[in-house]
Length: 456
Image (tube, rainbow, N blue to C red; front, top):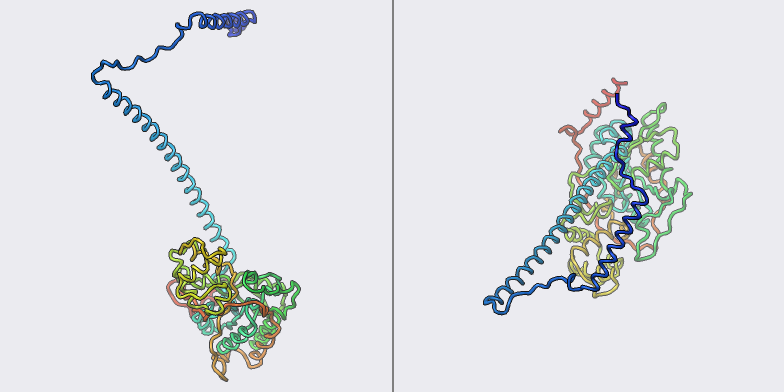
């Protein structure tokens, strides 16, 4: 049997003694010293041999020298090209990795946005089915662009009460608000609401650089200043009209993006009305067209950089604007077409008439100015017929119709010092009310009601 201790001792170690180590170092130093001394005594032995070159007697010396020079230049060019190729390859790799990373971030952003929308809004048919009263929230600056006549007619056919809610009344003048209320009440019950009056939020349009800014409403404003008190009284009167005294009235909120649906729900839930129940999530109306239009620029959030031809969209906005109020807002001279307006706009923004002009960049900047709400505006009200009753007078009793106009004067409106731009009334974007390739009507809602009652 082999002894393990002896086997370990039999292995040769790589360790050396200090005596040998110092001896080697001394020998190396001596060798280097002798080399230095020899270089001083015999410099010719260490001198590098010089290239003798091409003899002058060589018959093709100039041609050979030229070939050598060309060869050296070719080698230098090849090395430079190889170095640049490696740089381009590394840059392309970095750009490809950045694109992949950006695509991943954009995909994650889209998925998060879809999840937020799914968690923040209810399907339209569920709100129509569950609610007895549907509040159609409109932007008071341009109510005509926020309406859906097909949805209003479908609600009337289903036996639901549609109420038009003019939100953001604090952004329009009093006269314009009264004119719109008069025009819309010829069709449906209409109430003014100012959600910002109770939240104490200063709207984006109040920080317009041109003209004086309106004073933000106080945070402790009363419900009458917001229009919620009149809304509650109208809902209570409709509840008594329907004879539903035992169960609370169910109310749903519907509207396009940017009209303030969730703000309205948040405010009415804070009032804690016992006889009225609001659905937790509103329903959003989605336009059929996916391209950006004038309503997206003026009333909703949009990305002007993604517009393929922003100049055309600028022209569509200018067609709706009153020239005198538009020139007063931007403080520019008169113009004949879109390009002239963009030139004046660029010079005004830069503060000099010699500013560099680019049509596309100027159009994007103008769209950003409108998208961010820096231009206070309102649309002219539609002409209302004189001394005619509302088309859908049967939906409410006469006392309720009179109650709807009770608190108009108490609602907060824009300050007189704000210089608004006057616009022509817009057109609403068409929406899709179909579900599973069939149009919604009263039979569909009754069928869903019967299905829900059977499940309960």
